[in-house]
Length: 116
Image (cartoon, rainbow, N blue to C red):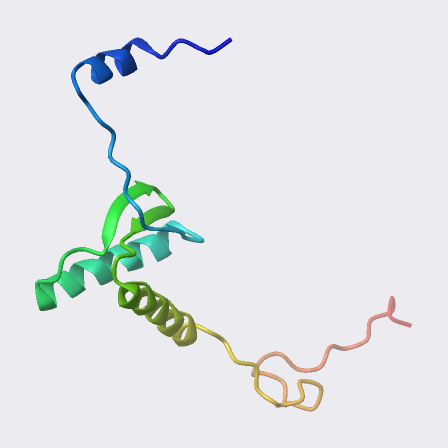
């Protein structure tokens, strides 16, 4: 059996309402901070160049729909995310932790009776 459409759907169809389909890139962010970074990036870009927004829809706390009509926009966002990640990445040094001098106040651990 086919389900009957909800009453609000029938009313919109009778009124000539046609849904719009919008293509884009769905960006699911790891957290709200990344989403806010993208929104700020879009705001700054628009203010600097009077360019249209590349964010089509703010869908929820972690998801955005971005324009995909200009491939350079997606690459721009990717590049800015890479810059953010590089700026906040920790790189391990080649120093051997075993031979490094102890940090101030953290000398070698003394043996206790339990250590034998």
